[in-house]
Amino acid sequence: MSQTMKPATAASKLGILLTAAPEEFQSTPISRADLDALRADPPEWLVELRRNGPFPRDVVAAKLGVSKSGLARGGLIDPLDADQIGVLLADPPEWLIRERETQRNTIAENERLRTRND
Image: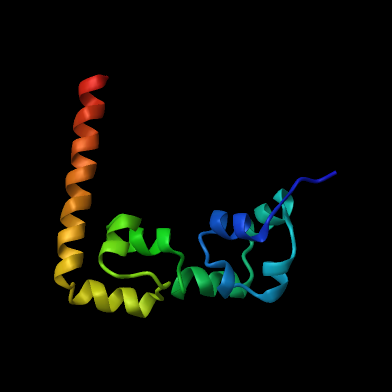
C-alpha cells in the first residue's frame, strides 16, 4: 500500500500555495510517487504557480530576504505574486529595508555561534 499525504503537505513540499492549485490537487491525497512525478515532470499549472505565484508565506519571505515574522511585522499577511514581490524589491519600503537588515544580522550571528561551537 502506497503512503499518501494531505494536499496541504504536498503543496508545502512543492513550494506552492494550496488554494491556488487546481481543485483536483486540493481535494485528493497525494502519494509519494505522485509527488515525485510532479517534481520530475511538473504540469503547466505547477510551472506557472512556481514562476508567478501566488506564493505561500515561506516562499514570499525567502524571495524578499526576510523571516516570516518579518512579513507579519511589515503587515504582509496575504500571499503575494511575482509582480507584487517585484514592486517591493524595486522600491523597498522602510519596513522591508529594516527586516532585511535584521535577517542578515540574525544569519551572521547564527553563523558566528556555529563556527565558535565547532
